[in-house]
Length: 288
Image (tube, rainbow, N blue to C red):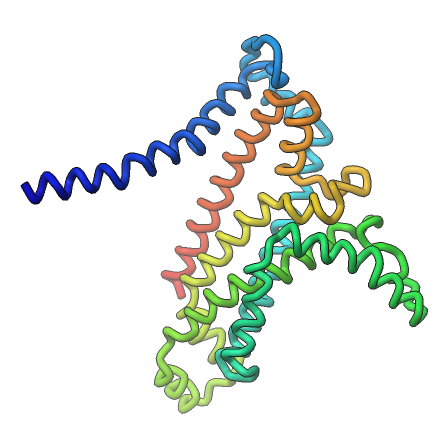
């Protein structure tokens, strides 16, 4: 009887969650995959077109540009945010800053909404910074960065400022698992600060480095909110990411089926990048 009750409770807790997940996540994904093989624009009749949408993607300059921009942005931001986060974590762990206070300060950006943060930075880039630059005659900063060919730098700055918080916490957790006697032994052997980091610290936090790299790459490959609030894909289509292109052209450009095919290709790209990262970084963990 107890086993039956336990099994019943298990079903009552899991079945509704699985059903909701399937309805709001799996079913839309499967529906989008079906639409990717059709010519449906969001209304009217549906006709099966096979691989026509997928072939068209690789011949579309706008789509190719969005993939190039997304990959470049994700690579630059993933590296920068991990370097910044690791440096902050090392400083906090070494108590260079007031540890408890600065932990809260550094984590605060992650709590704020991405759109809110991005709109604030939009105002800073377009109004505050040019005004200050004009007063001090800093010619290079008098123009709104988001309206120039360097608009992608503004998106990188916002993404790093907000994303570093989460990565810092993970690196701190990794650093606190390293026993002090390991460092003491390295210092007795005469290892320099750099040698202690490269030979002791980094190998022991390698699993945390893997997690941060994979999560950061996944997040920045899907960049969307920052682009909506900062540049709206501009100037021109210079900062148009894949996610932004799928959303804008799919829902308001009459390309629902075409962009569904784009979403399927993008999903495969995300899986490939994650698997390659895990394979390479986890193998490096073993070597270290």
